[in-house]
Structures are given as structure tokens and as C-alpha cells.
Amino acid sequence: MDLIEREITVTWRHQVHFTDEVFAPENSLLRDVIVGGGDRPPHKVFLVLDEALTHFGVDRMVMEYFGRHAEFLTLVRPPMIMEGGERCKNSYFHVSEIHSQIDRYHIDRHNYLICVGGGALLDMVGLAATTAHRGIRHIRIPTTTLSQDDSGVGVKNGVNAFGKKNFIGSFCPPFAVINDSALLRTLPERELRCGFVEAVKVACIRDAAFFDSMENDAEALSNFAAEPMKRLIRRCAELHMDHIATSGDPFEMGSARPLDFGHWAAHKLEQISEYKIRHGEAVAIGIALDVIYAMKKGFLAETAGERILALLLTLGFALFAPELTHTSSEGELLVIEGLNEFREHLGGELTITLLREIGHGFEVHEMDLPLVIESLKELEHRFR
Image 1 (cartoon, rainbow, N blue to C red):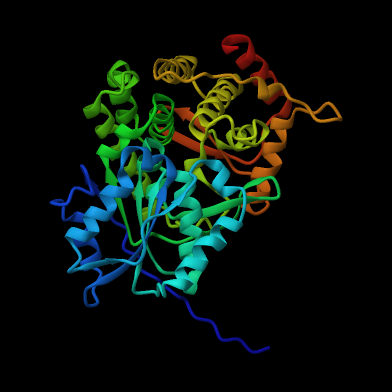
Image 2: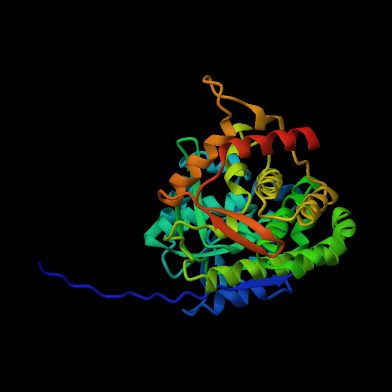
């Protein structure tokens, strides 16, 4: 037997910037981020824009911005307008569309692909960026609370396939993330609210003081007050970045996904509803289910569990959906299949994050199915 073995270490720089009105001509942040990447100007840029933003003139603002900064930046074509939302992740065809434009305009590994949109579009465009030329520079400009405080600041890209969420995907940190608070003003209330739940999630498992602050701000957040929202987004993004940088497993090579508290049921619930239930709405229900389960199991004190449920309700989330009761032709609850799919997605060993107290998550490797079903019934009884 003969063997050559080496340890390979790769260092990534992960940067998230916060600004207001990123495409205002006098705002130099985007230009400076690109110029700071080295190489000689002008820098070639291909930009994908969420279709919903055209109703607010963002496509026009992009053209004006690149016109103002033409000495440094070359927009190779007008923004490519694409549909956002989960539907854009349900076909690999959209990835191929972006690849064809990368090829047509000769975007290489020293040029930039920018995506301006919500989390689903960022996921899909990110996959195109990481697979073209084995990875080109990708800048994310998230436009929803959910993507600004959670998915958009992460390192995951993907599309759905075979009825499973994110079956095809990659791990790769973007070149940069730019969170623009002004873009949140384009959102309806339903989309604004969805991002709050990821902050509740990460506070529950990592930061009790952050949970306390959200309780104090709950009424203001439910009315979408600007400053509490900025605080929530920044702290949530910071906690996610800390996890990526310090957990020792940023690309999830192991079987644990501690930041997926409440997600095993949420992913399946999205699928059952044919994505009519938004990701944030599904996660709120998934957290409520796991909180009730943890209380019934004796892991979590009732007072702590009720605080979590009360915060979710105050923030405006429904904690039950009829899809939770949908069954297969054999009479089995479809949502329970989420446990097996979660196990498969993690690589074989089921690992679920639960709570011992607010701010302290821990992992279990099996779930008591009769108790899960009992928890589902209580959820229906209390919140239907």
C-alpha cells in the first residue's frame, strides 16, 4: 500500500457591508468594493435583478449608477431581469440561462456577477456563479429581511430538484454582501416579517440577550419600525457570520446543522404547500413545533417555551397551517417525511437542534415520533 496525503487549508474573506441607497450615484460603496478586488479598471460587471424591483425603478437606478462610475465599472449589458421567489429555484434552466450570458459577455474569474434580489434568487444565481469557470466573483445585494439577516450573508447556493429543497448546490462565500436598508422599503409586509423568524431562531440557540432585545422591540418590530429592524438585521447577520467563521465546519462536512433549528418540518411544509407558504412562515411553524416537542420531552421549561411562542405571535406569525395535517395515500403524515429527508440531506445521521433554555441549543439524533405527532396535534389545537 502506498499513500500520499496532505492537509489543505483555504482562507476565505467574508465581508458584509451595511448602507442606505446603494445605487445612489454619490454612494461609492459598490464601486469601492469592486475596485478593492484588484486588477485594473474598468471592471466588467454582469448584473441580475429581481423582476419585482423594476416596479420601483431599480433597473433605471442601476443604469444611472454604472453610467456615473463608468471610469471604474463596465456594465456589460442592461440588468438581466429574472423572476424571484422559490419558483426560480425549481428548474436548473435558469442557472443555464445565466451561464449562457456569462459565456456571451466573456465574464471571467476576475469579473463580477452581481445579484440584486431575495434569498431564492441569490441562491440560484450564486450556484451559477460558483459553477461558471469553477467560480467567478459574486456580489450579493439582498433585498429582503430574510436574505439580509440570514440566507444572503451565508455561503450556500442551490436549486431544488427531485422534490427536495436545495438538492443541487454548492458552498462558496460570495466576494461580498451589501445590505441596503432602503431596498427593504420595496417589500410588502408579509415579506418584511419573514426575516424576523431567523433572528428569533438564532437568538433561541445562541444569544439570550438578543432574544430579550427582540421581546422589548416586539411591538415596534410588528409595526416595521426602521431602527429596531436595522438592529435585528445587523445582529442576526453578525451571529450567522460568527458561526460560519468559528464553528469549524462552515461547509457542513459533518452531520450537524445547528443553525437549522425548526427547519426539518419547515422545509417539508414549504414543499407540501407547493411553496405557497413562505420560508420564514414555515420556519416559524417549525420552531413552534420543536418548542412544544422540547417542552413535552422535558428539555425546555414551560415558561421559556411560552416566551418563544408569544414572541412569534406578537411578531405576526401564524403557528399552524392546514398542510401539517396532509397525509399520504397510506395515511401517513407527509410532514413526518421531513425527518427522513433531513437525515438524507445531512449525510445519513439525523441531527436535530432543540433547546434546553433560551440561548442554549443542543443536538439530538433521534425524535420520538409518537411525541412529535402529539406535538403536532397540540399545535393544531392551540393555534388553528
